[in-house]
Length: 535
Image (cartoon, rainbow, N blue to C red):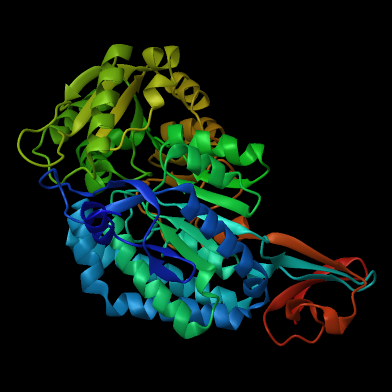
């Protein structure tokens, strides 16, 4: 290695493999951007070669049996310690996340996303200790017992660009769900915020060391090429994959993983339709236009739950509502897009909607000056036009952009709902008027089966970290409508296998399945009747 090669290697950020940070094996590098200036940040990160991925897989495989034997209390202690370390380094982490994403420190990062990340970790630790997520079930008559447990392989996590903390591959909801269920994790950082991920990975390694978990329980790579990604998700040592990102990339990974029989949980695309019924629009169309814009522009429109499609009837109230929408979407923009890729994709979406025949009512242009910025954008089209080509008009576009579909009557509104793809959310804004109630009765049964979360008189951009939350939906919103990536302990079950024990003596059973277990609750089949009782 000559001096120039040595210098390049030494300045490239290390990856977390086999229990410590080490120089990657790489053939190319990348740098993150500062979205406010459009300039590259100085730190250089490796695009790992397959040898790094092979090492990660081997180390994960070694960790599988030890981690599966680790007590829930010990895993919970690790998660809580990690949360403590993150809180102690909050200012550094938030400053780096702001630099790499331009998301505002207040209220977004400091008062919203960072607390959400910590809350998820704490909830997961508590659920891990409490153990009811295992759904321990005992048939006393037949002496058959079962519960959920680890998958027996690595979980690979691909993190998104829009949540550098709460969905980060080394600290977010996918990560904590996988580790809480006893699985080793291989984390892929998003290239939009690698420095943020590096900071948190350093603290994660400290928590692993202090808690006594296998050091290879969690490993982190910054990036790798597409072919190695396909090879990774289809490897026999991988048990499951969690992906949050674009539909195009996700479907290619999904195909590779499922062809090899691997579980693949993906959040792929959602326009989150909002239906405004005429009775409510007559009462407060101006207020509703402002409420819609606030939700659509939250985080500069870079939420997977952004309302990207709105539907209402072409009557006097509807036309007034459209004028109000045009007015609020014409106001000066604020905030930045996360990356050049997001900016280019938004430009392409605008051109696609124009070509398909949607009318541009506001925005539609890149803003001059430094950084990644785009005007708030509003399109409109008739219900008939939408129904001619519903797929094109449902293309998800990150950014403050929404498409207004103006239908002629309630019957056409229901037709639009029937033509929808699967979505994470769907909202109906309605009054208690007789007119709205009649429309709601026809619309709700159709929309209910198109979305994971149905809302009434509420915008979809608030995803609460609650056990009752479902952040999922029918394809192509996600790959599996029965699973959620938010909401503990339900999110655990994506990375769990059902373990059944038939006629196994008491002393050989896992603690959760023993008859005299002081922890948690279980389902017991007694004389043909299911009852939930204390262990």
